[in-house]
Length: 459
Image (cartoon, rainbow, N blue to C red; front, side, top):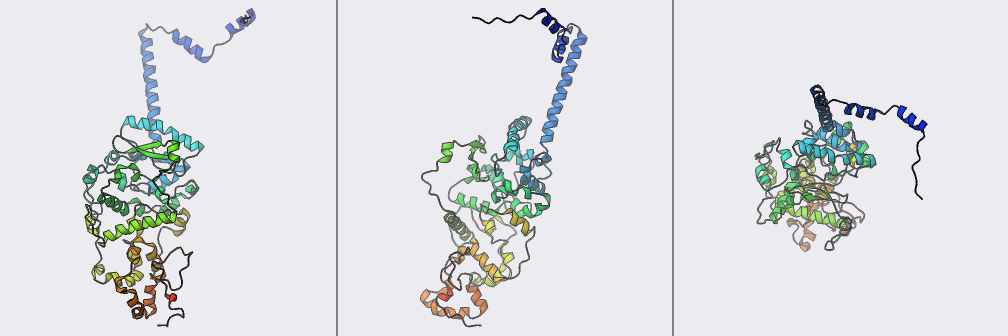
């Protein structure tokens, strides 16, 4: 049995005819009623189309210009670390898009469309932490900076920028912290930390040492080149470590963009790699750092393409005069106690390793923008010398002045007569049996009270 459409009554049809048509229908009727043969009407239509086009272009241009301002980025709470560090950087007078968007109108429009995903993240919650996955391109940098610079602005560092660029080394490999102070590498841009990113805390969180190229990056790269590697060919070497299941995929020009890993690939670790505990990984990293340091100070000689010695890169910074004495290696302890702050200008792990240790944002704020003035303190020197890879690279080995064990056992008394002399021994040796739970370990497990169980004579 078929369904027949119900016929409208005469009254209903009359009501439909008498009902006032909607706005769209009325406009459509007027448009159809226009006499297009009349040249005046054609000119009017052209004027309307032209005016509408200009209005649409103006709105689009205004929207692009407005969303390209750094202040627009600051509206999102999750961008606080990036905005605060940007304002404190040497690039604060330019726009974010000048670095993060490829030059050109088409690239700008494409970027705006792609950025709609940021609105989605703002609503549902951004990745934690936010990590840069698309690198800043060299062509963005060279819009303002010369490729031909041979020394840094200070005149101290010898850096052949043109030579590095010819090797296709991305600018961000060395200058990754120039605008955002390496907040990802330092671990201080998590969602739980965002409330601390305020203007009044900027001086405490953003320091020049994180904006400038890290010497450890130069040394690590040179070390790899000496081993026949070209680490910058892997873009992940130049970008912060990404923990969100994404990797950096190579583009045709040698840079990279983010690409989501297949879930099975991300979940299955390589069978050839052995997972190391945190302590084992730290020991391996420390050993590698110490090998580089020993090479840099001339303790290990190799047939190298790129020298690690200070004079290779530095024009003005040189080895201090007192370091030139023949017995400096054996007699620098007193200088270290008196001038530890000066020693750390060069002999600091942060300067010698590429990977920065994670920091606690609350501790940074409580510590303040300036360090306390150093006062000679043997305990501080002892702790620092044990924690520093630079110091422990030598202190981990038996000093040449200690002779053979059987000889030194009876001969070292004259070297430890006074309290000050004993204190120097405590840099490497504990007085009492080492505490297994101690965070800072002595370079050796030989401790004084193993033999001197009744104590020492007072000096």
